[in-house]
Image (cartoon, rainbow, N blue to C red; front, side):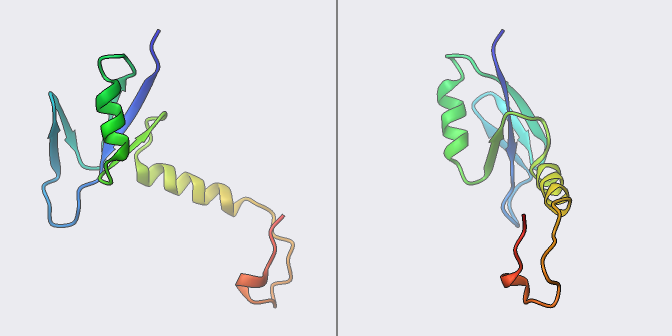
Length: 92
């Protein structure tokens, strides 16, 4: 069984919310499943180097993944002195 990746188009502000790459149609912010095959290797490589695409191995949109990461960071225990400036606080 081949691995699957997800590519998400992130439309630049003021640009079309739809992008066509090869035979695939991407809608901004919606991950599209792509099977990792030899035939798709060039496409996956091209998308991963394009600033308007996010390529990952999970199906979460970049916003969901970012929100989840932010929530996980918030769960880190912060036992630093709250009176210290934020850039001086240490997290463990």
